[in-house]
Every structure is written in structure tokens, then in C-alpha cells.
Length: 116
Image 1 (cartoon, one colour):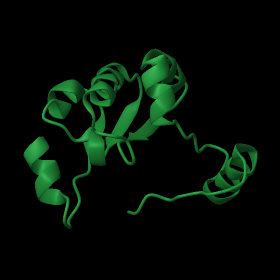
Image 2 (image 1 turned 120 degrees about the vertical axis):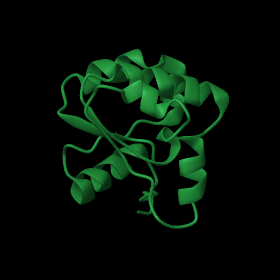
Image 3 (image 1 turned 90 degrees about the horizontal axis):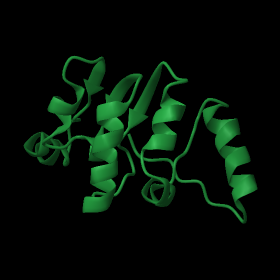
Image 4 (image 1 turned 60 degrees about the horizontal axis):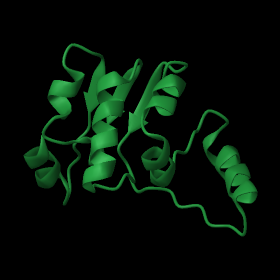
């Protein structure tokens, strides 16, 4: 699955297009806001959901991965983990919880499997 990229003149138009194409349930979290605010606001948001997809498009720098680890370990809903969310600590972080890990076939499969 390729990440979907939305480009526009302003954020309002971009969010309108996302809503039109992906539906009103789609929520986009920028890596910058995740780093600035930490995992707690997103953990509170996840408490209102049945499930969440985490990983695609997230940077793999040390600060982002630290926040991501906290987010995955404390997420109160079921998770589908892909891409950057597949790390050596992922299985331990979701142990005993409802989660699906999705390393996919293709060029990144070996890299994802090596990480986990």
C-alpha cells in the first residue's frame, strides 16, 4: 500500500479532500505534533476508537520511535501495526493485547522482519 499524498494551497482544502476521499473517520496525525505533544493526547483519542492503524509514514528517528513505543504500549484499542511501527520492541509492546502486525511482501519485508 502506497501512502496517499494530499497537496493543496492550504490545510483546510487538504483536510476537505482527505475527508472526501477517505471518509470522516480518517484522522491524520503529523509527526511534528506527535513529537511536540507526546503520546498522551493521541492515547486519549485512541480510547474513543475500536482500532487504529499505526506506522505508515512515521519517521524512524530516535525521538519519534520513543514516542511511538509509548503510544503502542499504552494504546487502549486494537492495533494494526505496519511500516515504522514494526520494531524490535513491537511484539513485547503488544503482548497479550489485540494487535495485527503487517510486514508485507516486497522490498521492505526483510527490513521489517529484521527489525521485529
